[in-house]
Length: 275
Image (cartoon, rainbow, N blue to C red; front, side, top):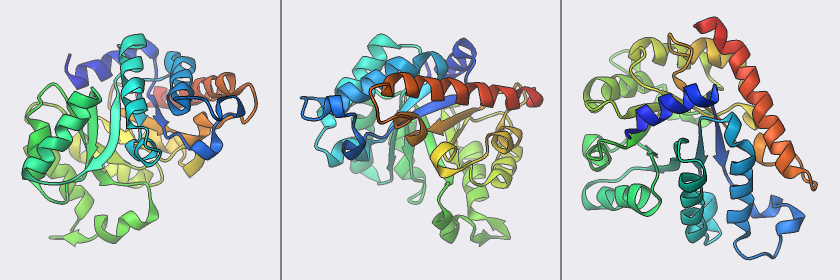
């Protein structure tokens, strides 16, 4: 199944636009897992199982696994999601950006090693850096556009022919890269006005991956008003730390599920006005 079809089914089946980011910080691991073999996998897998009824997918951040030397646990985690929750897409948050044979290897890593349904990439090096990913027509490519960090404005707001660079990126991806309807854009919830401009430019053609709610302080109501497509979907609204570390006690699984459900419900309350 193609990425976009899988995502659309997840939006409908779980009635959710929430995506949970899997950013396992070893220093914040539950006490019961400290010292256990494959603790990172066990933590993330149990978060996945607790939150699955309330989400449209999961977004593992590769840096957290690689820094801990736990790439094998990321493989295990992706396989767990595909086995236990096959209808939910996996977006590998890797933000890759290289050319030629190197980009081909990164594509193999994301799609063949980890079995991700989509991967985040950096467009700075142009089309040939994206081409190896785009050749996998059943896979999703989520392109950085207007990121949630304040420093993103250093380049993304630069004017090109009077137009901010992030809008040039959105236009380029929508009109030239999205031939097989496999592309999406990253636009941060901390900048709802920019989300609205991107949505206006690309219409309903592409989903938006929207980080920045929860611990980063993005507003759910403003995000939904700015970014939902005409049918009230169109977004993967990501929350990571607010869900993963909802409790430091023995109830960490239940607390994560509760926050995921509440966030899903808050999003649904606000996205209904867009339909």
